[in-house]
Amino acid sequence: MDNNKITVVINTFESGDKIQNCIDSISTEVKVLVIENSKDINFKKKLEKKYSNVECVLTGENLGYAKGNNLGLSMVKSEFALILNPDTTLEKNTITNFLKAAKELDEFAIIGPAKQDEFSMNDDTVGLEERFEVDHLKGFAIFLNLKNFDEVGFFDENFFIYLEEIDLCKRVKQKKMKIYLDKNVKVNHLGGKSHNDLINFEMELSRNWHWMWSTFYYNKKHYNYFYALIVVSRKIISSLIKIIFYSLIFNNKKKKIYLQRFSGLFNSITGRKSWYRPKI
Image (cartoon, rainbow, N blue to C red; front, side, top):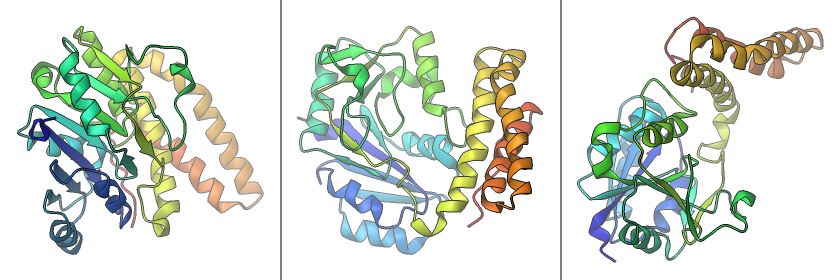
């Protein structure tokens, strides 16, 4: 297959050495763009010295999933792009099978792999054909037919993390474009393993804040404000109850997590941007 047709984009933040397992699984004939959300010049030098097919771009700040991937996609010159999380690895024929699917399909916007976690195939795919249409895909591995995104655009940069890939898929489907899942394409995903272990708790705080913010924003964007408010109403009440409970039993760690959840919801409901960033 023609590897010049595809560019891999990997958006990273404090991924340490874990990204090297991902890059090691990609053919050296495939161009890889690493978008590193920091000023870490040593990280850039290390990657580009070790891998001749890798270009590492330092953003200077934490742009998040949507904006970081959009930056990478804006630099892609090939026909197709494969967005990967740094905690993924490809199998031997992954790129070949993505390109084979692209060649055989009459028209498509996005193709995703059927392997949705580290070890097993998603139960929803059992009994289905080898390749079939879906409404959305998980964001750890997304193969894009770039010619179809001039009108749709890429990721909504109001999202920092969470639901940006669901939002993109929804906009693709609204334009009557096709999204496929291909059971012949395998991508291994560790899940939640993209960051250095030393910053795990701060990342946990960030994940809770942004999951709540994105949940309200997504529903407000695609439905309306009051529908979104109904969707998150139980989460608001639950967060407040748990803040009080964990305060009473002096569990500061759990208290901080639920404070973050409430803060994310409050900021989204009141129309504030997704401003929270991990404090590391």
